[in-house]
Amino acid sequence: MTIMARAKLLCRSQQLETMLMNGNSVQIIAARELLRLSLVELHELGYWRENADQLKDYMRLYRASGPLRFNAPVSMSVPDRTARYIP
Image (tube, rainbow, N blue to C red; front, top):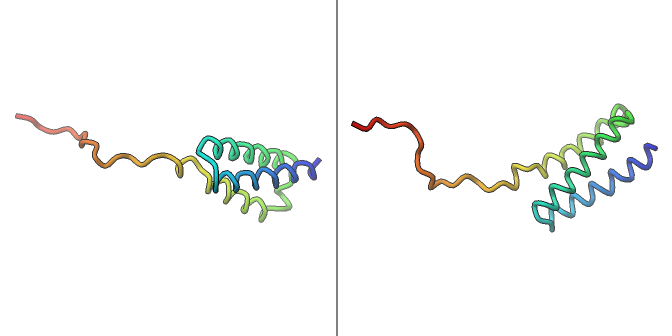
């Protein structure tokens, strides 16, 4: 059971790395979610207790593909919305 889950994790992490290089944001988000599912599956099997160093590597990849990286920055031309006193 653990061997199959590890194989899926490896395949999904490679898929996410490929999508980070060549994919659009929708593909990256989908690949990231698949990686998360594999991480959770191995957690439920207790695999990460003995292999915490591997978890750190996969979590680095997961965080690197986070949604904040793909959001457009806030425009600097937006008018200031602070309250002003007008006589």
